[in-house]
Amino acid sequence: MTGKLYVLSGPSGVGKGTLREKALTDKQNLVYSISCTTRQPREGETDGIEYRFITHEKFQEWIEQDLFLEYAHVHSDFYGTLKEDVIKELNNGKNVLLEIDVQGALKVREKIPEAILIFVAPPSVEVLEKRLRDRHTESENSLKLRLSNAVKELELKNKYDYVVINDNLEIASKELKNLIE
Ligand code: 5GP
Image (cartoon, rainbow, N blue to C red; front, top):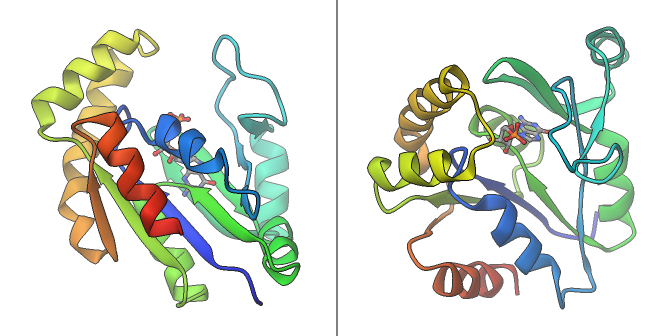
């Protein structure tokens, strides 16, 4: 493997998606690995762009066929990274960016110890809650679940190589880009 593997994690609503998109612009040698999920697409999401949206049956089948580099049950659905996608790109010398949850990131580290783990943290849990509410993508139950998971995820940030605090988007984005240079 010649490319580098970057793993980005952080609680729901912290701004990982925006930071990831910014990191991908101008970086011709960096590719994003599209995850598979059993969750329903949100409005505006397209199969094969944000995620590969697959059924629980297919997900189970792919687990049994050992196709995932890692997978996890996050919030109330399954999410996973296909092994082949990542390994092929790394072998072609591309740097690969994964945006996955904490459980998944730690599994990747076990399998690929050279992976570089970056955690995006909010300035506070209160700010995170406000951002999630302002996003209007979640029901109250889903929001509560995401917030309680956020607290657990934040406890694991010390296991990461780097922590980027997303208080100001421009500053956080610069920090992330520098880490990926
Ligand atoms: P969302 O439903 O908001 O798109 O994502 C929920 C969570 O699942 C986020 O924390 C996201 O990083 C995580 N996630 C997305 N893809 C994967 C994946 O392939 N593996 C794992 N373990 N987590 C993922």
